[in-house]
Image 1 (tube, rainbow, N blue to C red):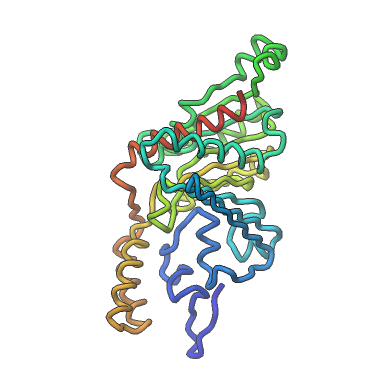
Image 2 (cartoon, rainbow, N blue to C red):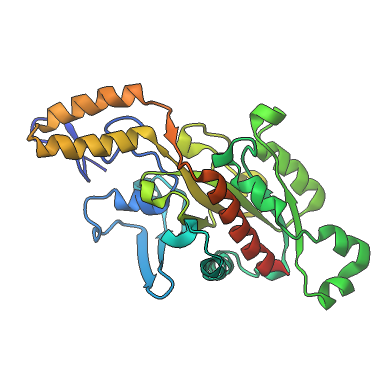
Length: 320
């Protein structure tokens, strides 16, 4: 969404900066943040439906962004589909009583984006590098899953029905630097052999807002492009590439360093009365110095451990 000023220069429809006038300034994997980047919260975007609800008792906000058609996809820069964002500020707190409501919400919205979830054979893929904490969400979720495919193969459908089990298998494919293979290549081989009807991928994401780090969960039926938020694009994992339906669960664990610096400095420079052109030139220089640098909270170890367990508990509830 780019408008022309009277002097012919390009300006964002949000502010002078918020639509990536400075390269990489607004890197985010969250459809909600893309939607927020438009000028007014209530602006109508053709082909896009926005729905919000807030549970005061649980302090959980649910935002659903539905991209209905190609016009909406082009405006949002996201594939057609449903994007559900669960915002829970208390998610990063070490409070077991709060994680149960979060688990229930994850189960509820997983079932909303994936039809007949309990009845299909499911492959769960935990993406990321377990040696790098902010990227270890997927592998740690898989570590806590109750997988059942091998049990059903050994004891049969009667065992499955008696114990009310779903057919679940899981894999942590690692990253290309470890395996020399794209995650999509690994998963296609597994899918060919095991023939799941649904793939659920879990991955760490990048956010624009530091307030959403480790407090937000995005669920979508459009799949995922691993590493897109940090500028390390890998081949997309979706129905077109894998041949089966794909649901993605993501949690933002990093934010672009330039975003933090730019937002802080922009506010300060505006208060000082600097002109738009001066602010833009300054932030452009700052962005060059902070390119490809990402920030994560110092409590990331505890956060990843806690959130991965919450997500795994939700998945276990879906299938057993």
